[in-house]
Structures are given as C-alpha cells and as structure tokens.
Figure 1 (cartoon, helix red, strand yellow):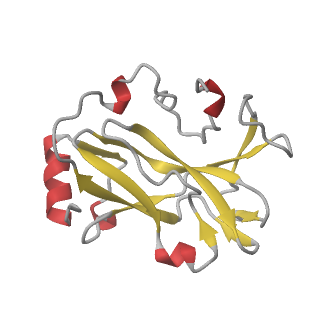
Figure 2 (cartoon, helix red, strand yellow):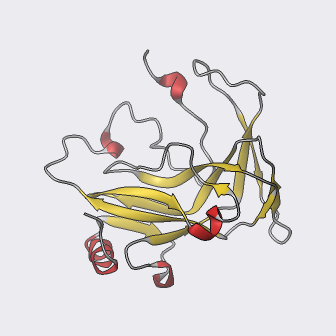
Figure 3 (cartoon, one colour):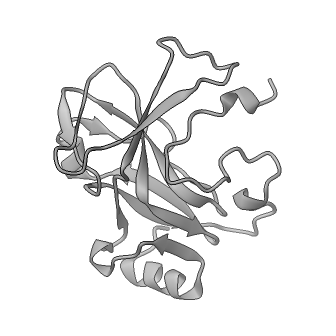
Length: 179
C-alpha cells in the first residue's frame, strides 16, 4: 500500500519519515516532491570497471545559468533533501514534467530500504540536450508500507555502502561487493 498525504504527515510527526528541508507545499496526494541539489558529478574514465573504484569529478551547477546535460553521458546528481525512512520503503520516481523533458533520474536505483538515511544520488541521463537548474523539482518520493518486522535496518547494516551522509553525489560502490 502507498501512503497518502495524511499518512505521510503522520509518519513525519512520529519521526519515522524525516525530510530536511521540509516544505508542506511539496506534499502531494501520495508523494513528496524532491529537488535537484547544487552538485553534479561525472566519471573520470570513459570506460567503467565494475571491479574497481571508478572516481568521479564533482562540480556545482551554476546558480543562474544552470547546466546543459548532454545525451550519451551519465551524470550523478543529488537531491537537495536529506531523508530518513524508518518504517516504510521509499521509492524515488521522476516527475512527469521532468520525464517530458527527456530526463531520466535513475537507471535502476529507485527503491530505498527501510532505514535509508541520506540524500538520494540520482543516475541522470537525457535523450537530448537539456538545461537543468539547482533546486528545480526533479522527483517524488512515494512511501510503501512493509509487512512484518525488519531484521536489519539499512542504516545499521555493517556492509551498507551508502550510509555516510553526503550532500554530493556518491559514485558506485560495486567494487566493495564480494563476488
């Protein structure tokens, strides 16, 4: 089941959903709008290797003129909002207005885990050149209820790779996996 606006508000009041900064006008019927943070990153290497640490270069989106994203390139972005989810499963989806500009905000990582506490890293790709701006609405968080008890919350997992709080995009940590 997806939480409604009233249920999201109740979870915020209980402290099981945290959104910073929070703006009541961003609460939709059954979602919360999030915004593009001021940082973007790109990978340094033209060929990425799943077994190694692929380094990124991070830069700020110019405040007034924005930044033009180009097709054929993966950009890592970040949400302006820091979120915590302690009793529900958060899903991040792009806003329809963003999709209609040809912007995809995640390749595969749209689901968070119960216990995820951080800014969301976005895996941004575009179908044609498009100018983006910091603080523009970029996505929406949808919260799903869970059935049963959680054994290990994400923020308590010893092998969780994305627990360090950061307002900058975080590169793939696939290289830390044992395989």
